[in-house]
Image 1 (cartoon, rainbow, N blue to C red):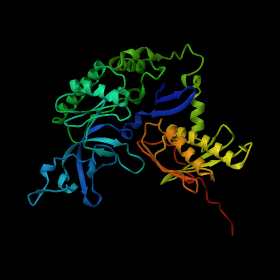
Image 2 (image 1 turned 120 degrees about the horizontal axis):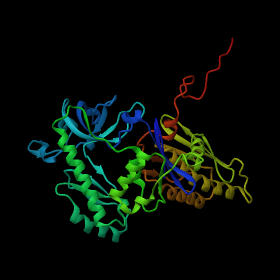
Image 3 (image 1 turned 120 degrees about the vertical axis):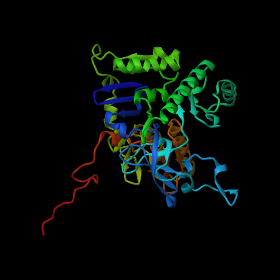
Image 4 (image 1 turned 45 degrees about the horizontal axis):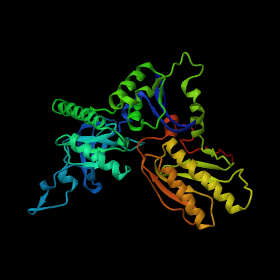
Length: 418
């Protein structure tokens, strides 16, 4: 993991070998748009029964939206004719009401942030769910590890709060889990102490800086190290890692920009790979290519054989090309952080077994992506429909702005003389 700090931005790059697989960018001006995980005391502006949603003022330029399914309430309080009834949002919220809420999705384009009242505080190994009975362990862990962690949690679980054990807790000790829980409980107590004395709307808790947040989510024993080119951030990250995983502290390194002949990102060829990730065309090793086109509603990816003419027959050439494309598309979705609806046009394959193998390879490649995805099988037309959870703007949106001449259409109307 490489962290490059500039006066106006911080960039975090995650590498597998020499290959760039994830990139994160934060700027000071992003404080109003990169708010995922922040906790607010907000004010309900209006309630829309027809949309089963409420708009909430949390102090951002656009009101955030809270859907009925994300409202926290006691079912015993909802009665009709003396019997418990399904709660409607107008029964749960009213304009002017003050509510504690957390952002689950950043504002994107014209859409405001999405909220939940199920507040949670993520740590390195566990997630604390205050004032809840929630109790769970990641399903990605095997049964023996789940049993071991459950025995530890029975001892460290704080009274009155729920806990969710993360995949990162695999192999962690009781002391590490205990430290994580204690730190999260202290954070929650600090948040609670603010609620009575603040104006509404107010920010009660802000997620850490991008570098610290990414390291909290990603950094584990499988990483060779984290290299940071800023002394202040290096000290902050080193102290944070020392508090949660002391054995990994030595893997946090300071990159001496003055002693090194090249800047950090150039040394690891990250700038070069970022520029390629902004192109619409991506070349495959065999000479084929994929074209990535973004639209308002969805992202379309087209697979081409290009210069790949194969050696045996057409079906085999197309099959091998599609296998390469499946791996590369999964990497590009992760690197470019493409979210929403995605349609992939693989080259038509006549043999059903080949279609099944390409779909299997694609799903395996997507399994390395921590962002939730849903994928359909390849249709007879060679199309794959999928969704990838959209949390924030993608790589292209981070580094580009809309063309003022064509307004993002990519074309300019030709002037014709009569």
